[in-house]
Length: 269
Image (tube, rainbow, N blue to C red; front, side):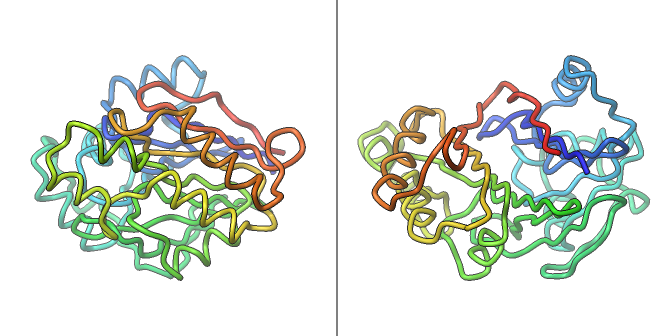
């Protein structure tokens, strides 16, 4: 079964990912403006009417900005845990509140089926009301989305291990963060076990626990002020080479995602 993947945006300005088969699709987070979503769909010749669900990782504004419009104007159901939905309902950015008709509750570690997609959400450590990653299988292909995570837990590790295609946070370079302009309390929050994950922590973990079936690794949620795509890639490249893991043409594809512009539209047979 053909599966397509597109990052519409990845970073503190807004996060949204598209996963689709030939007949239907889903969004993981909808934290960019609805006009941007519609423009990207038009530019890539995609049809918003094929979207069957939006899966929300947590209630921070850069992950939920467009969910009210998608539910109200396009009748797309919004899925997440009860705690995340409560946070969405309280959020200042929700000018269009979700009604019960478009709210869907899911529980961690329980698998649901939405047409072609087998979906399991799981706990990740981050400083929102509640936080989940998503493991999504389509036929024989497994995608895991872990966009905001303070550190790799045993639970997250189990889903990383089964992934063929992994979207994983590489938020900051440790030196750039510590030498940068952020106030100390914000630096501490970012670097905490419930904050975000650094390039080196992510790269070293994967190098030491490389999933045997991993084909693609997309580095997501890169910081505007504390990271660069080239630096994130180089950190992974160095760690992988030290453990004899081949990149690119001879091994896993490693791709830093852009913060405010879409990626290419990937297609996997």
